[in-house]
Length: 149
Image (cartoon, rainbow, N blue to C red):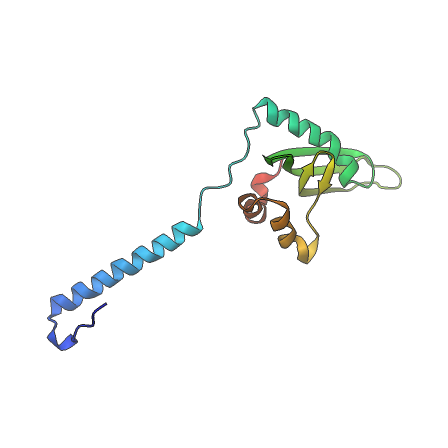
């Protein structure tokens, strides 16, 4: 950009130059913000038979994999990729004398009958990023309430 000698500019030229800079700056800020925020992650339609069947399969599979006793799980299918299913599971243990109550709520990756879950604590974010496709991982980390069953 060419430099202009301020002593050669008249009042209107200075204001016009400043206005153009403000418009350019404003446009850059709006572009940056809109580039960072996209539409929310698109969840599978729960009214389709394929989604319903996969949620039933996962609901039957997950209690044995996620709980320390028998129980039930409510499942929300979050997506599929090749042989992998991604879901959010809310599971409750069936109360017994040994385990009077308990449960878990977490996102899971399922490949057939193999279940992988994110790490607890400090490792949670990185493990979510490894287990899920990028856009789904972002949704799991940024808006988990929307993804739960």
